[in-house]
Amino acid sequence: MRLKLIMAIIVCLMITAPLHAADAFNDVPLPQTLQLQGKAPAALTARAWRGRWRNPAAPAAEGLNAILIIEKVAGNKADIIYAYGNYPELQIKPGWARYKVALVSVGKKLKFSFTSKLGHALDFELEGDKLTGSMRGRNVKIAMTPYQLKEK
Image (cartoon, rainbow, N blue to C red; front, top):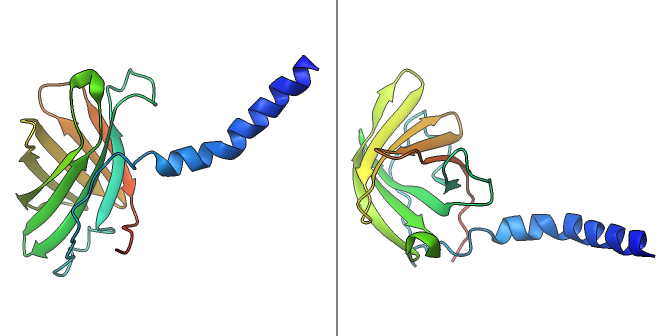
């Protein structure tokens, strides 16, 4: 009987795991209006990505959820939206802001940097559909995957 209960719990967890994963970014606020504009550079395979900032040695479930959107592209400049979720351990409350960045092409990679409103210097590198980031001065990284923006 106990084994059946354990198996039932495991099956329930396996069935609901994708639902929890899909909701994992609900704590990241986005602006009410988005205007995706401009011709994207060839290296830009998506306009939005999501991922989790974390120390590579920490468990995968730990960290700060984030979404990055390239809202407008004009030549080698871009307007981006950087949004992040709740992380009580570091007293970070959900928020977002717009930033202007310079897009630098290095071979097939596209690089850009900015300082977030939390004061973190963030460096990003896009190759294919993977966007990776690092936080200067800290052992914190992010691996982001394309994110489908919802219609309002």
